[in-house]
Image (tube, rainbow, N blue to C red; front, side, top):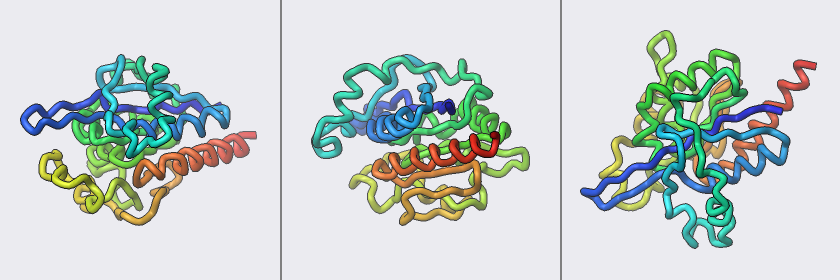
Length: 225
């Protein structure tokens, strides 16, 4: 059994622009379902701990027509996250950064998260992120001072499909910043940058990303036997 640390944004409120965001339901619950079905454990963490703010749009009829993720959310499975400051990275086989625009705010430049990512990576384990989740990878610096994704193949949420008007109030362009340091692809759904770094493009890639993690865990287990 592998242990995965799923990291969620605690949420962000922009009163000036009447905008609230947080983590995206499908990007946690779809991978969680795949991972748990395969016998792996998923623990949840966020900057503030406790109940992190969900982007309510992610459980609207437009994005969750059958109400599947709304039902899971309302069951309370994501109500008790561990604060990032209390996480022990050595306990985990992978860190998985859940998307949602909230990741652009309270995860992107969070040094505690950067330290967790580096520790997981240095232990030979997997760093993964989906949609806007790769934002903190930009600021996770390796000993050479370069980003952990520097020079690697990556994906993340494309600028062209951002909601109309939203890029103007976001703190930065995810695609723009990733393109400066890595080989960014807007087309590929799931991309391995190397054996330890995995990124997914959007909510619809999250299940496939989890399947890739399961394959990687299986491969590692076979190697160990």
